[in-house]
Image 1: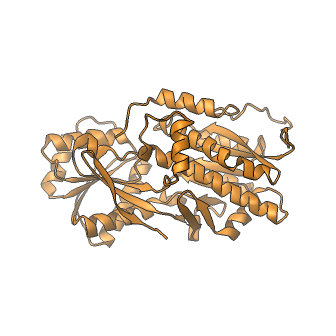
Image 2: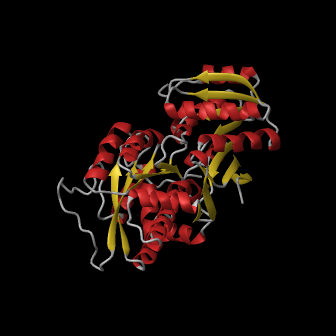
Image 3: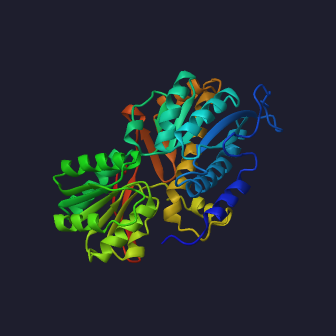
Length: 397
């Protein structure tokens, strides 16, 4: 289902969307520069940093879509904030899909740009930024990272994206109780994303009564997986978890399963941005998606105003939608501070999140739970050929 819009095209579109923003080093303000406190209309400016994967790893594709979501979200809340005398100035940084780069960027966000809130993405960079933000009383929002280690990591980190544990529990229940699978094979690599997916789903699968026929680790950069695929097939596994953060690896492995005639097996891809594996391979593929795209106005804006007509909405939705939801969350926190006569500091914005608790987002609400994790709707997709549909929804109101 994924069409042929290029990463370069997405990146260029993102650059056009955000004229005041750059990657890596923020907007180029030097240390000690006095930043403007009000805009041309007299609104108080709040600098808000966004740490995005504009390069490195899966970055570029992800980051461009997230950049579009930021602009759509800020466009949506601009008038409401102006009505209370506030304007958000986005500081867009490229963490290069790297914890090391994120550790440098977060210091600039705090010391140079004096941001009271930072929106972060990817598990590694967020884990690196969390203690720095806590030390400086800066609110850190997880916009798109499902790592279980982020839950309860810091009292200043709020996860607006469900963890692997939540997605795994939903997927395991659906596959065992609805689809009738009993025996699982697992293929993972040595990366941290793979380990998190592996451990979360294994726990959820055994909790519902499933058994594990084979559990194999592979090298992510290998090209020949036939022996591993044969091992899984011979184990009697009925469904296979592809525990990794690399769509290209998933495709290589599924291709070799099909070469062995294992097209009847089911294939699981947790928290994947791509629902199109089934159409590509004509085999049963299961993916979990955070439901953030039920707002038709956002879909129309995304597809028309930002020239992404050639990209499948379901695939892009979680990247765009979570950033839009971040803007909606921010608006409500700022509104709380304004209504209570509080300055827009990290501590006061944190107080807003703790006090409000449940927030209106696209298509519903999210509620912060213990450990600052979130409960929000998750859809399980099943794709075979061109027939891609939601077969079960979880955590609905």
